[in-house]
Image (cartoon, rainbow, N blue to C red; front, side):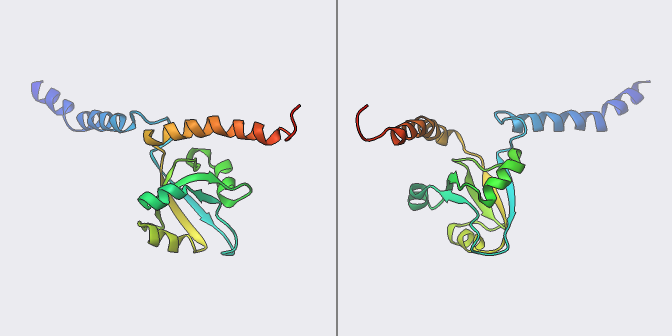
Amino acid sequence: GKGWKTENHGSSHAVGTAVKEESDESLRGQLPGAPSVFTMELSRTSIDTKWGFQWDPNEMLQRGVRILEKVGEGTLVETWNDVRPESSAKPGDELVKVNGVEGRDSITEELRTLNVVCEFRRAESRHLASLQELAVTKPVLQQLAKKPGLPQ
């Protein structure tokens, strides 16, 4: 009886628990259904059609990385975001690879093509502060824009 018990305890059961614990560990701190890296596939019929990415110029200048500042209205990216909310690009997300290629200049070349597979890294905590600041600033700017120049 003893041998059977050990055998039953072995292979599949133990492996199952080990794998589960590992995946739980890697998911900790992530939102459900929102992986830290996501992929966006876009295609266009003409290079005149804009993808719709607007990058943060300071991040580009200082660190040579593409951090999404905003998505252009009515663009391919906005359409993707509407259709695929689980892998939608948000301000603060970083473009890591395009068509499997890394590096600022290589990515620039790839973004000039008609079909792109963009790999993004979700905004991390370092961007949260600036995003919260943005959320506060934007409505204020909109209010200011609405107010006529003359005092009421």
